[in-house]
Length: 135
Image (cartoon, rainbow, N blue to C red; front, side, top):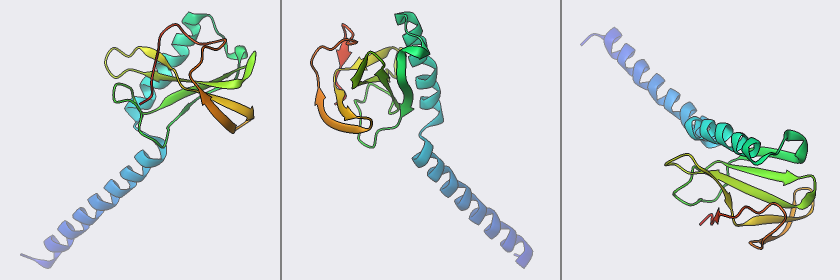
């Protein structure tokens, strides 16, 4: 085998490994694009059906928890803080099968922005009738 063919194959394999490393880093930092797509599409649609508008929220955003979530749901979640209830942070997930949006029963209790003091499963102002556990 000639030296040029061997060098070409080596560079091709090396390039493949480098591309896989960058792909893995992307997934670790940004999450699975397929799952992000469904969460970004379904949850805002769910809020519209419930009669909420963007002005009703202090913030609403997609997050990727560092801990494992219920296997029935995509890993990314949507967290929402309502203006009329600024001490409770609600979490929503999208089911893998059926793409239904479900509010998780566990809600973060905030003392001030980004300072969690507790977690509650009690019924609150914006609790939905049906909720599911994150575990």
